[in-house]
Image (cartoon, rainbow, N blue to C red; front, side):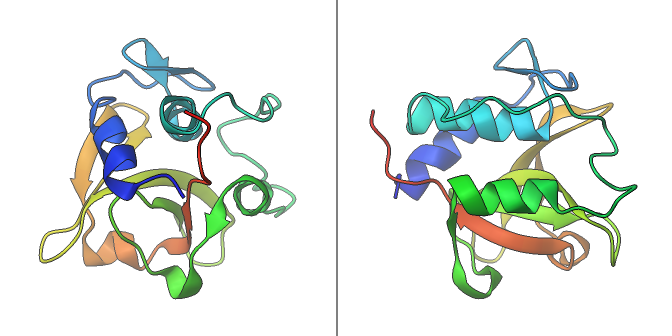
Length: 147
């Protein structure tokens, strides 16, 4: 796996990047998937595939777990939703809804935090509070990099 501290440091460098749907460029614009993709490029190497175009509601209408399936394909699953610095978090924004938001853990312990991108705010670091924790659908690590 890529070292967690390396991933967390890379995520922090994205803070302040504006939100831009389907984008993935540090400083220019990104959405939550673009953030995960950009950190892949920073820490792992070339992206294995380019995502197809997607809407902001993802696959809500048909209930397909598109993002969860992709994460399971390209990232390394962690058991029991445990996390440490550098882990990728996948969230369900509503109970029973598909998983459709991503972030990177930047700090653990008494005051855990994560970096994520969302509309109206861009890339920010947020406290991983109880309301956020209950939304975690799955946790992952990046695979071993080529960098």
